[in-house]
Image 1 (tube, rainbow, N blue to C red):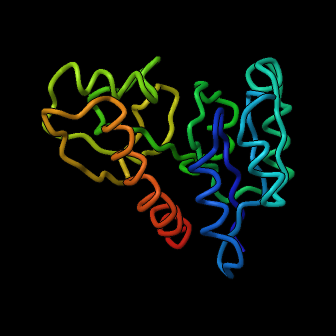
Image 2 (tube, rainbow, N blue to C red):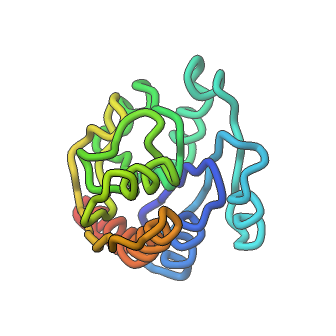
Image 3 (cartoon, rainbow, N blue to C red):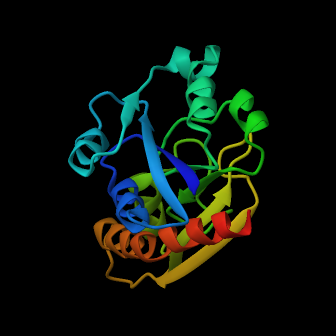
Length: 189
């Protein structure tokens, strides 16, 4: 049984989708969710879904091995960032090479980098009158949104679309593709 640990910073819809997808699966399960936001809605979702969830602070994440030790004791096979906003520290990346992935709400390399998340991305897509956008699932390295691309899915952006319309289209792509891509990565390990 492969063990998945999810990192999230906010609402947790992608985390919930992954937890439900892998519930009662024989090949993998989400064993823990970690968040840098003690008020994140993902904590409530985890409680309802009976999944262990912990919050941590910046010191535990970047200045000590506290979060690394949690991951080691969890024996994580894959670390999945699902709306997690902090840059991942090198001590964790070195201990889990090619085992940390992220989902980004745009077609990288466009609209990536520090500060490019959620509605910031969707507003930029609309402001720049892009004809298409999508999601990118990629490996995490020491740079924001620069890791090797694993998967992309596209959708059209209509001239009348608002940033909220784009967000809705992206959310649908995330719900459809993210769990399947995570499963395929685990099967290839």
